[in-house]
Amino acid sequence: MKYLKIKDLKSWKRISCLIAIFGGLFFLITTIIAMIIYPGGYSFTNYYFSNLGTSKTVGTSEPNPIASVLFLLACVIAGLSLIPFWVALTSVFSRKPSTKFLSYIGSILGIISSPLLMAIGIFPGDTAHAEHTFSARFFFLAFAITIMLYSVAIIINEQYLNIYSYLGIIFSIFIVLFLFRIFDLINPLVQKIIVYGFMVWVLIQITKIWKLDTR
Image (cartoon, rainbow, N blue to C red):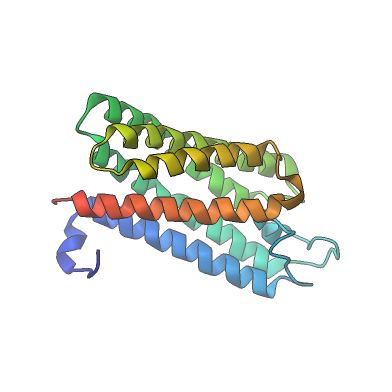
């Protein structure tokens, strides 16, 4: 993946990887811009990502038209970009029936999480609280289970170092603790650690897909 070549675009798996990378970068850059222009100032440690998408700002209740649109676009693009990634990831675990089964279930849940991620942006937390909360909770739950399933598959897959599995299991438990608000006082910061950590996890899997793809 060091140098992108035209022939790489002949592989649907590598195209899937590039789409996922684009979606991740788009989410990262767009949300950072939204934080910068957030009316009244955005607190990285005290505000959730979802606060970027509300129609009015936290505390001051100022109109938030631009940042909310950016957050909407970030969630929709990221959600769409992950769908082909989940399909491509199953190819890494196709050698054994056990890992194939785990990867299929994991990717199905991953694909289910994609529209939930999009819904987080589509339904603002202030004007559509119930829909937003439902989408957010089940998005995090779905990809926590997904990472756990893939972590088990990684243990079985000799092409991976077990450290990736152990980190995935710890990460999944961390997400569940977040959902149960164990880190209540620092939950907004923990959410960002989870989101950025998920990006790193996806990038690790992308490098594996890219390396093993023979086109």
